Image 1 (tube, rainbow, N blue to C red):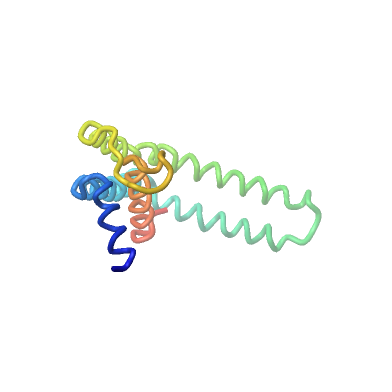
Image 2 (image 1 turned 120 degrees about the vertical axis):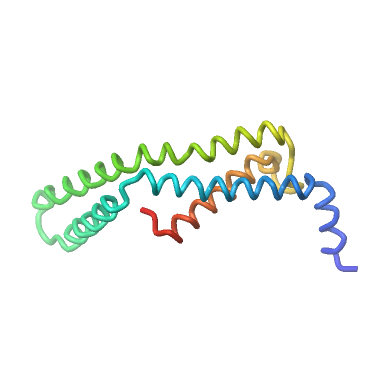
Length: 150
């Protein structure tokens, strides 16, 4: 009998019920996607795209600058100003986008409690919040890429 055939059932037997793990993963995926949709709804996507283009132009000018450092100071100031504008536009929508994650975490904590869902890795990584946060982060990132959210 191959070693994997003996080890895998032991791992599953030691972990939380598969339905609990699946529920945590499903909740994480839903909250990660919801988080990015909330961000897209509350952020000024067109303005962020415009700032992205302007920033790329300024950075290209900085890369192509061939002169004294003091001559590049206006470009550097413009670059910092554009970064500040982008931060102002993204900060509040980013905070609001965290609400679905927090709601899911509170709800899961009430339902699941202090349960270990993974039988391997360091003790801190076996708990359900680590699995939840990793999966929700991945779901949010993939949603951001798929929908071209800025």
